[in-house]
Image (cartoon, rainbow, N blue to C red; front, side, top):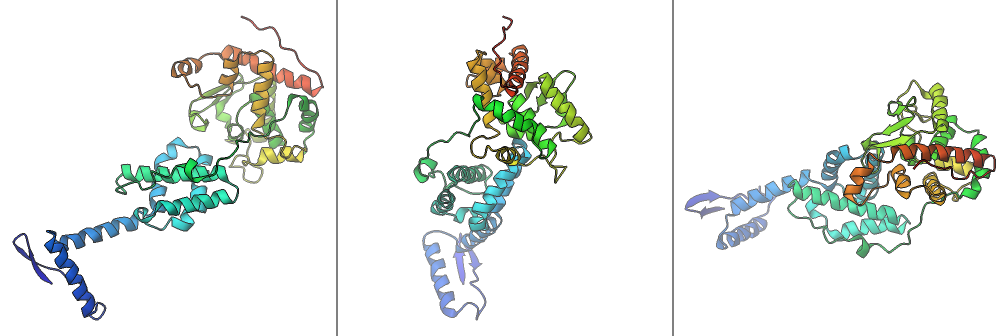
Length: 365
């Protein structure tokens, strides 16, 4: 088709006969004339459509999500990054990953998220939805897509309300029965020692499982967990009781020449798996009645009931301080009290092992 636009003669090709029939060519010519009548250039419009198609073909949901994950990698530890990628691969990429980001409708993402909820994983459904929304938000900022069509997908308006279930935690009165079982545990020794350090240090399971020898100063009895391995992304100093130091010196004979303190028995270059602790507890008879994370709640409950300063306990647990001024102060405060607290806690556990209750000692003002 020959036409004039802006005082210049131009040509527009519709395809090769017989792949494009005469009728199809006439229809395309009629469309081009409508563009001309509206004041547009059908040739430039064709080029823009081709450019958009090429842009969309390389900006699929999976491709953009992968770039988003690379961008965020420095903020996540290896385990977190693996969980995020696995959740998207299993529940989003299989259905929508190959589609251009711009072509996916909110209803399609909603259907994928509700399918996760339907199998009983409501927590995971909410997390996956937030991750997809984060991908779209990042894509708009980095000009991979023009608009974020997922803005109105609000978890509370898509997913059913759920009752929060706290992780099962062992009670103080169960310690005299549990601690001898832990002492007599005949499974992998790394698992038993890791559980002991977990309980003695009141750290999170992931922080204990991923512990590196380089993080410990056994002579100073301090464990420095780097920011990248902490939930709140702040370096955390953990005072070590003499009992915790003994556990680590025992582990030196087992893994002292490696990077990891508690390597996996199957894959020594990797830490103990995420389910290791709870599997060991189940083997000891505490399936669904106690979890590894629950020992932090036990520590907090006992220490609070015994009169320790709540601020010292919260700092030991590395909980986030809502007040920014207090947070700045707490990062350097309470170390002396925390040293006393953690030695008291270790002595308390030793007393419970023998069936006794250790009363709160007098503390210096």
